Image 1 (cartoon, rainbow, N blue to C red):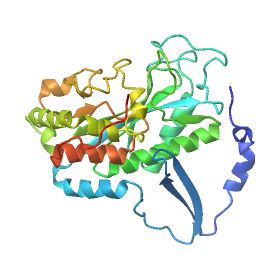
Image 2 (tube, helix red, strand yellow):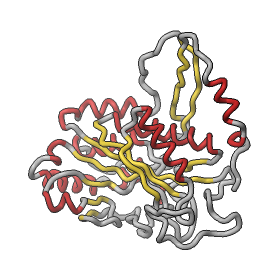
Image 3 (tube, rainbow, N blue to C red):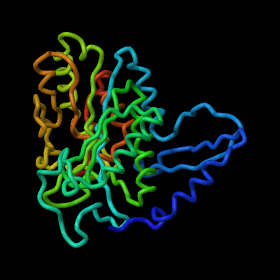
Image 4 (spheres, rainbow, N blue to C red):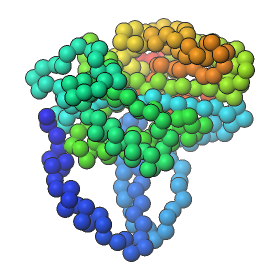
Length: 319
């Protein structure tokens, strides 16, 4: 397996330096989203005080403005981040160097060295997120071998984007230590392999109350009228990335059609079975790609369902 040279360095030597006292100084790491809208960058600066957090640039400020406008509705989000582990040569981690593993089936939530690859990475990421105060709430091995998912939430308003972006940053840093790469490509392997999404669970205060199913159905009707708009903003390439994933196969809906149903993993919007039975709760938008910007996704959901914006002014670019 091709791993980075830096991962082979003696970590014991580094640890001796990391134990040195800092003499009252603070190392502050700044994290930001780069110009691609997908990658994260960081740099470190020395201060003699702990600074307050600052507003990110990028698309956070517009999301924050919308979330402030709908704050009385108390929108809650939970996002399910799928990712795939690769060697630095771009080949999926743990796969045969010159071939493919067995067909999909035994890998989802699997146990055993022949079914899951990279569990140590997942466990380290989970613990690091706990330590950082991120609202990580679960994880599991996914359908394609070397593919994983972690869930963040529930978070209210702007917190969703903040927590998911930092969870992504920590994931990349943990993978760096292990010498592998985490990709958020929505379809990292062509052929009969599952893609990677970022399913988004969403509710408002009214949806979570008795009789909330009516509010869920109203929101879904609004989303259906703006399908093209949502497809356009659910990946950084205006739908091009998601067109490789949303084919109607491998537990996805077709990018060209909007659909909804109870306990239907092949629909655009899925109402969980328990919600359908109890009559209140939340729904799951299964369209966002793994490389979506959570600020954009949550803002779009709030705009359409709570601010009643209509029309599909922007068309996606899928063939």
